[in-house]
Every structure is written in C-alpha cells, then in structure tokens.
Image (cartoon, rainbow, N blue to C red; front, side, top):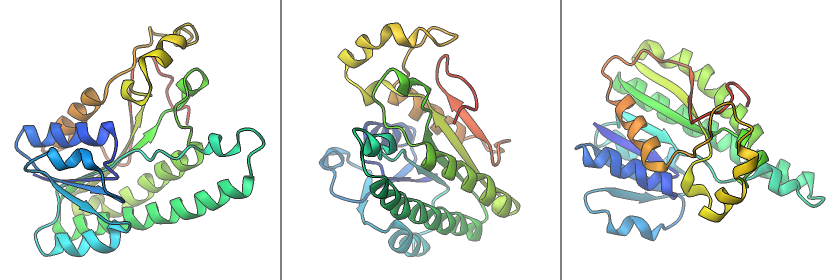
Length: 234
C-alpha cells in the first residue's frame, strides 16, 4: 500500500511513518518546510512543498496514486492567538489562510483517489477537553470545519470506493513535557475514567491497522481515540 502523510513534521508524523513502513508499506511524507528528523529515515520519501495539492497530485498521477492518505494534526492554536487581549483580526487572518487551503487539498486528494477507484483518507483533529488542564493547542473552529468537510466529501466519493473519515485525538503524551502532565494530574481526574495520555506510537499503529482493513465499514464518521475522554464535545 502506498501511504501519503501530509504535514508530517511532528512526533505523530514520524510515528505514522514508522508504523506504516515497518509493516512493508511504501511511505511518502510531506512537510511545508525542511524537517531534519526525516533525513535519517531510509526508505521513506520526503517531499517539501507549500502547496501539496498542486505539486503532489500531478506527482502521484505519474507514479500511481496513494491508497491511504493521512491529514496530520495542524499545530495552530486559536485560543493562543486571543490570549492576553489578542487581536481577533489575527485569528480571522489565520483561519482565512488555513481553511480554504485544507478544503482545496482534501478535495484534490479525494478526487485523485476517486480516479484510481480506491483508497482511504483519515483527517486528524484535536480533541480538546483536556485543554482545560494542559496547554495543548485549541482549534475548535478548524476542527469543526475539518469534520464538516469530511462528512460532505465522504458522500461524494464513497461510490468510487474512497472512504473518508475523521479521527478525534485526545492530547497525546509527546505533545507535552513530563512535568506538564504531572502538574495537571489533579485536574485530569475530572474525567470519568482514569486519564492516561496515549502516545504517538499507539495512535499510529491504530491508524495503520485500520487502513489495512480490506472492507473498512466506516465512511464519513468521526472516530475517537483516547482514554476517558467525553464523546462528541468538539
């Protein structure tokens, strides 16, 4: 299986690359700027471009389309922009740049897979209930927009055997230092189950295994990954 991981420059991006590659899949990593950590990953291709919809769609057209695409979490923090009397105009500018770009990329890659007649797309969003206690990026607007786009485009391409879904990820261990997790321990007891941050490798292995299911019975859905997290809170 050919796998494309978009915006892979994070712990989770590296974990996804390792999980897919170690079980024999062909992996292409995308970043919008150079990411030195990938220089040591032999056998994994790394493409740097600010506009993956423009460059990679034609690139894959000439060498067969990927069968699995993962839109990694974006690190933008909407709440951080507004903290300490931040400027609402700055947030509007950030969203007006990010959202149209994501929608264009999702449409372009869904169409690429539809032309190939197969494929699965996973769009990752940050589940934010833990953000009351730990400083993970809060991206409510982007998350809701991503989920809405997934549900909309999934209906359009499902008939071409392309399955598009979102995955809502609880704050994972590598997003914060051990000290930050420790200091937030008392607040995190508010969760119905004992809170335990999942790690990037666990997330990546789960996504890899789901992608390998030959007749995946999930289309246009939002899957939740985490321990003790509330459902449908974004």
